[in-house]
Length: 517
Image (cartoon, rainbow, N blue to C red; front, side, top):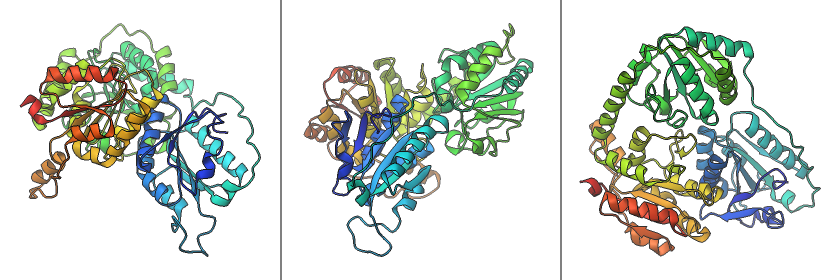
């Protein structure tokens, strides 16, 4: 059934409870990637889904397997990623205790971190729930889902699932009258501002055409980087986390926010900062009713909306009251602030960016290196930088990049991770070696939980529990069978990165603050 519906890779770990899910997997023509830990398998499915736009599927066992993958499920839920977790479960729990892998209520536990969690009590129920998940991934805001099947059902005889009926399942399209009204509002505005989020990633061409015709200035969320090209003169960049971006928003006489939540992890403040009317376009009704106070809410797919808007906007022939000089000055100021807050990282980001191929897909982790890079590394295309934005999980980058590299064989993929985050999922390096993935892994080692130390100092707390004994990461990577280098200069780093993309396996590139000291 899964193969018939387009699934070609499954990430997971077999066990005695879910082994029946593996019967016939090779005959179906599906590749199984053996993770070293269910958390890693979940992140791989996440990375695969972000790279392909198709669901990432993971198999796990009852109990601890489900618990271990709940963190990736939570990450996929918060970042709108299509991850489907299929697990085994016990046949009876209320009247029988002491069973292997027993939980009090596995379905409800999983349901706390995903869109929905359901139990299939028959083969046909399992088929129906899988189809429901796949249809919702296409038509609604994509979020992780969990389906569990009792062991006795997995072991039973079952009818084959119906063949899929191929049909286009479009997401909600905007009404023509709404699009025309937005076009008129943009045409009348003197200083319009458009905010693009990750939901607009598939409509970059239309977004750029809207900006050209309207003369609007623009910003993106971190997830929306690349929707607008770095050479756009009125593009402020991914600046929403900068405190005085609120003042810039306050200058606008109209704000159009497309495919973006504008929540804490976007803004790091309660309010965007606008006083002008706001038009909000999103797939999620909850977003349209949030405290940002949209005066005109449109429930629609961001891509369909931008395409329709670009078609009806007139050629204005006039520039807005925003100026390229104003934008350039703000961007220079914010870049300097970023460099001052976390010294020494900006030059490394610049050198690294110059060394990677243009179409590289990057997966980053919760590390200061990534926090800086997200602000100063302009992307020329959307959907090519993935980060654990909402849930903020450590250990994401390495396994997620493995999932992305599996999906993008022959295309460049790279991971950026900190020393502490690497500890969480370092065992998945063995998967990259096993699969022969040409994967550069940039390991930033500042010897501590530096972001937490800085936060403690800022809160006048004596730093505690922020330093851990690190191994020799280069030797550790080599023990896994990977390549590993510790460049002593930016030039050496660039050479190492170029070589890593051409290698026949993963390469750990070990960087420390001494690189620019």
